[in-house]
Image (cartoon, rainbow, N blue to C red; front, side, top):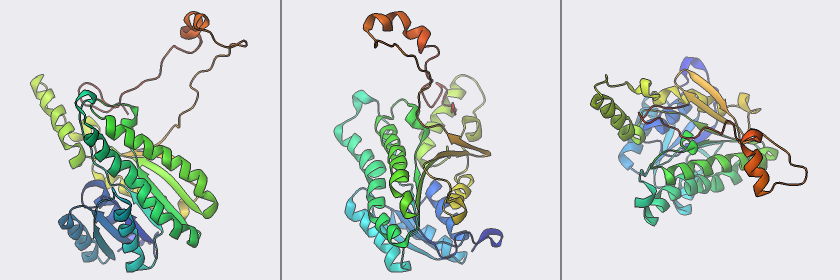
Length: 304
């Protein structure tokens, strides 16, 4: 089922969480086209069956598992599906996620916990069950889907927190698992999916209210999910074994490595800083300019 006869992933087994629609679906289909056997996962059995059917209709091998990643048992079942159906698990793409848009002052404990359980705990849970298999094999690829909302976005307390945690887990696993032949990278892509549909529609309606032409998805910085899938295939391959611990974004035609947190500007006070010296020197020493924050403009367009 490889596109252009390129069997980059022949013999590999991939698990893609949240692959019933959107980016996850695109990831699963492209991984299968590259030769991988794929476990398709989502909470909705109909979506799972549709994607499994698409892959099989194109000559690929796929097995479905309709279960939530938000529990350790659900994650175990997903990984076990790969082992029972295909004998191993080589590639884990942690894509499952829910949005949960609410202002901080309106957010309940349940609102927060639901997003964290799926996006953050689900990523941990699936890796926790998949990694022992990868260690035994001496080879593995973990690709975690993070988000630029880690820069801050109105109403995204739980989502941005979960995706920041996903990035930090990715960097930790890159350090911890490299000695076992396992790489771990995080990716992000601004895709036009169900997850971003409400935000895109709000931005378009706001433009019309300002008597401006409604922007296209691309105008707002959103691209087709299929445009991000080649990056997942590449990172899952043997040829990308030298790439580890990176945060990579792909938005349509643009590919970029995102910088990790580091000292942007440094000043030394030999005897230590006091409140008085900070009042006197902060602005001239490190405070101009301050770091940019916020993922979206007021008009709903991407700043990245």
